[in-house]
Amino acid sequence: MAAEARAPSKSPAPRDNTARALIDGAQRYPIAARRDRSLLGSAPRSVHALVCDAAQRQGLVCARSLGRAGLAVGLLEHHPNAPAFHSRWCASAGLVPDCASAPDEFVEIVLASARRQKAGVLFALHDGSIDALRARRSEVEQDVALALATEPALEIAVSKTRTLALAAELGIGVPGGVTVRDEDDVRAAAEDFGFPLVVKPGTSWVQSGPGGRRLACTLVVDLDEALAAVDGLAQLGGAPILQEWLVGSREAVSLFRADGRIWARFAQVASRMLPPLGGASVVRESIPLPADVTDAAERLVDACDLDGYSEIEFRRDATGRPRLMEINPRLSASVEIAVRAGVDFPLLLYRWAAGEKLQQSPTARAGTRMRWLGGDIKWLKTTLASQGRPEADGTLRAIGSFCSAFLRPASYDYLDRHDLGPAFAATSSWMLRRAHAAAPTRLLDLSTERSL
Image (cartoon, rainbow, N blue to C red):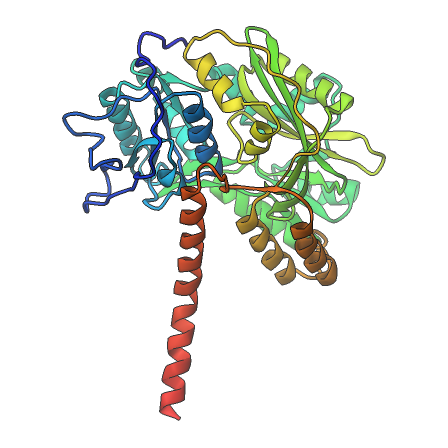
């Protein structure tokens, strides 16, 4: 995946905060973002790396990580208000089609941007964009190095069924469960494991019908709920899996592997997730590498021959034994905590894809805490609206844990005192969305008052 011949010479990273996404009415095409220079114009800025999915939290982490290393970073996104567009490290920003509804158009515009900006490395951070780029990988890699593992490794990692089967062969603990083929499998799982059960898609992203979508897990408490959830996933092409519900701590090990060895390791524990059953880490803390999950994670990525970055997630059962949940073979939304703890995964990923020499990463600092405040607010609202469900904390406990988090020292997603633009942009966008959501109700109230 070497791309040294394509990478532009290094230049000082931009230090102002003028990056803005401009819309000219043609939403299918990326627009000028910095100093009104179009990504498709006659004199685009050369960049070392292009980062798709800039609205993702890890997109901002990539921009900051690479920018601090003196690399020029271009950002691409179909949302015009991506907070990362406002980063001081954003050398250029542009709009692209939505990879879910127009995957081919998305790839075309990304490739056009890479050629015109002479990008050396391309980052894809979302399941949908990765799926679209993988479908045309041979074409993509003629123009730019794709910072992803090889196809054989990805085929295992993105399939939960194949991942769990491989883990079982290696003697790594996995949750009890079955791949559902018909109603009898649902009834058998209910008898074997009892309720609640987790209904999980065999793959997180499906591309079918009018567009692609990301599939989520569901907790079901009886047979009717299980049959309905399984049927819903099957109709979407999600290849349903039924698993026992584990309630122990959620620990994740992030690894960077290349040339048959591990160059970086990091571990974290998540105390809250969105959705509460399991998803993006909302409140998390770096921890010393647990020997059992670290060993299991390394054996698994070696068996997959999975190079690059990966996050391997585990849940502990009632006895404290770790059980594998999944492998995430892309930069995860929680990766900023690793960077703040001293393990710079985005920079390692760039250097690997660019064919540069790698250096062993230092040991991460334990005790680093991070909180995604917007996600935590959503977690609280979801939890309060889900009272009585097994995955939801009680009302007093949920409110108490949310409020007490303000009293513990922690860093916050988006917030960096050396790069305040994204935090202001994210906060402003959140406030505007809340105002717009409340406006119809308020107008209706006023109309009712006037009519009385």
